[in-house]
Picture (tube, rainbow, N blue to C red):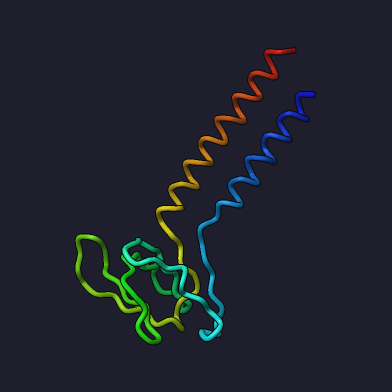
Length: 120
């Protein structure tokens, strides 16, 4: 009984965390990529294809073959990233939600396990 409750709880928590993934990956064929899910005014972490350092940008718009943003909310330096160099884009605000959900899920699993141990 104890293993059954623990297994079910951990599977549900794992499923919740996996389904809350906030990273959008893009293929090398720029024509097939859909950048419409990027919202102006949100902060994204862009992973480039060429292996250079990840960039955190405040997304503004898309102009032709480039993604345009600023270096941050307080830094007005313009950042231009070619679409052909984008491997993935991660929404930072949803990443925080996922981390919070993982902590809450772990606390829930711990509560279920402790209550099942005390019930026996």
